[in-house]
Length: 199
Image (tube, rainbow, N blue to C red):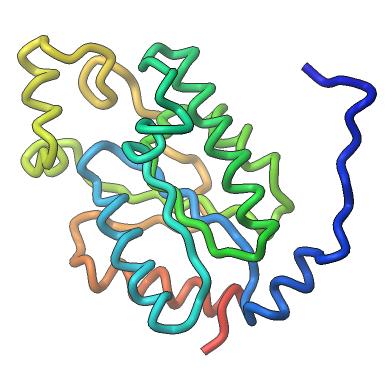
């Protein structure tokens, strides 16, 4: 709901000024893929690399946000959509602050990913699809969620009894069967080629 008497306040310190100080662009890397595809792991290793390159970053992780900002939400379809919307809004503020933001969420629906993309200018949102076969994700099963889903103890689990819509045109598609180091190098090269960071 929008209220007519609420107006966006323009501050003196702008995104452009923050980026000049940071010496890199503010963007969001929106990692999407099945549970166990490597989203959080790749994002975490990438953030470490960027930190040592003096890039100002922040990693928004799905489980972490469920402890606070989104702790009131269930895993119903409606609440999942609201979860993604909130994360998108938070990421938008962080990008305005000039940060390179990484998000690690399954975000299974194309509509919801498009909804978040629309919050940003074209060059500020990067959809990163980690394409990892279900069989490999399930064999990794870092949280034991696939086992619970297969046994019926966990309902509406993406990849088992809830559908994952593969991105049609991701900005970058990674092969989740490759090594972490290779995936991080691929992402770094992408960021350099797009002039998001400078070396």
